[in-house]
Length: 445
Image (cartoon, rainbow, N blue to C red; front, side):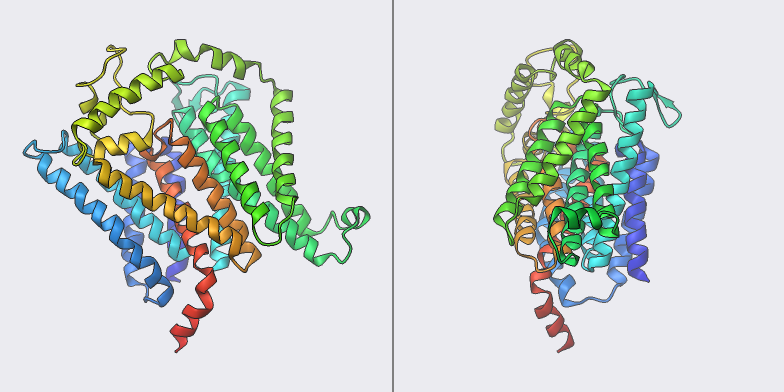
């Protein structure tokens, strides 16, 4: 019963965060944070077992980073390290929320049935956001809930303000949909004695095939939503994640061209749908970017921004300027477009190095890449087809955001950071499936 509450509470928190303008609206994000911290108390009440102990060993790295953020907050009160005490406290709470969400997702995902339900809930969130965004684009709906839209009019943004962050959410969920479609296709093939085209036509109505087709349709909708978000980096990150997924399955157990075919099919479906709707506005949008976003809308603008941000890293290489304090410190080094307030570096790797310092930033991203590597390994070696498929989808989602982070600040958007933490928890739980018999034997012994 405790884990049921954990699962429901985690899903509810993710939906509330995403629905509240991506977590940028204080009240809805406060509700989501409260839910997550209550789940943390529930986690402490659940009896420990060797499986959970494996996850608890990871607590050392987040704890060290939390301690460093606390030091920044304390020293900011006397002006020694951080620039803005409130910003450090606010972003520090967001960091703590994501850490608790990771462990909650890890605990929920340790059971395969719960893992699949959690993945399906994320797919449901992505489908809702994609349909909402497409309704905005196709019907000219200029409201987010009952609030008039002021920015990125004419593009799909879902319940988000920024089209890039909307793309960041959807690109993390698209690989999960494809991963589960692959699982159901394989399940259908195992149950069929004949592998001919005639046998496929005969079995096209069986539940596993229908589930595969439904998830493929969802994948096409998600892909089309990313296209009409007009997010260039969203499209690049999506293609990178799909390529990484295809490569993972190609070199993994039971090498087959099927996942490549499914990915190509979804890309073809997305391209055909986008062409049918009309891609002229997409091209026109990209042509107008230099005028619409003079500081960061072009590669040249971002390069100048990154060079200026690198000066901040050089000035505070060990201590950083304080978590969330980039926008206050950047005014000291900004060399172009001085009439614009630059609140983010449009590069999560660089901005976290500015905020936390090089050692803490490297430690955080080192943890991310290590866990993505474990998820990749699970997609290759896990014994269960379901586990491999969900690990494959999680790996694709993590890859998408890590690529997108090179030119945007999705990890500073609370809802996207929360979904990223959940994917990390799912992937790490899947990576422990290889040792499940050993852990269960130890537990019974």
